[in-house]
Length: 203
Image (cartoon, rainbow, N blue to C red; front, side, top):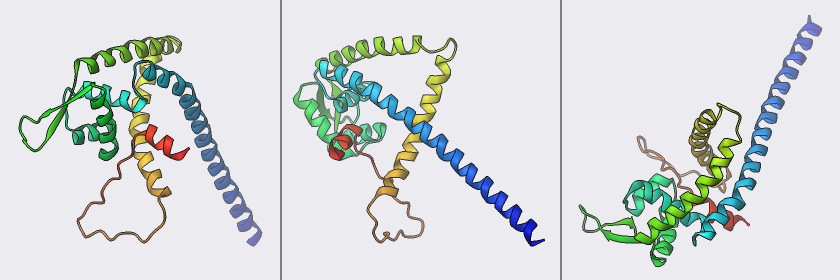
């Protein structure tokens, strides 16, 4: 009886270990694919932005502001899921370049709104033209009939990544005594700096 129970326990442990190994293998394979995508895109996207006279962080800011039409720094930070102070520095650089203009907020005298200047709109047009050609070639190289599904899957991946990155940031934070949260109080979500700023800091 004891031998039978031990045998069953051993098989259960082996099955559990195999499941863990398979799960780890899946995650590692996924991470390898993501790293490859990062490497393949990094040079093309940086070259595209630099050829248009902006950094990658500035490129993202211009395109998101173009999509919003007009926005405060806080609204734009929410839209881009970035830290407001980090984005403010990027905006300052774009204002100095003459690509973004600060104008009075129509409903709040204490606030200012960001809009693209004519030069900013021209830069966005150049960025779109170069990147549209690049990704048209990428989409054309996909198997017939799969492009729409891959685009949709990437959108789902981006949504999942926004959650997963926040959890990873929390897990990698320096260990300290947890701050007490009063009943009913929500823990503030930690905003992420722009990937380009984070990359430079971690070199």
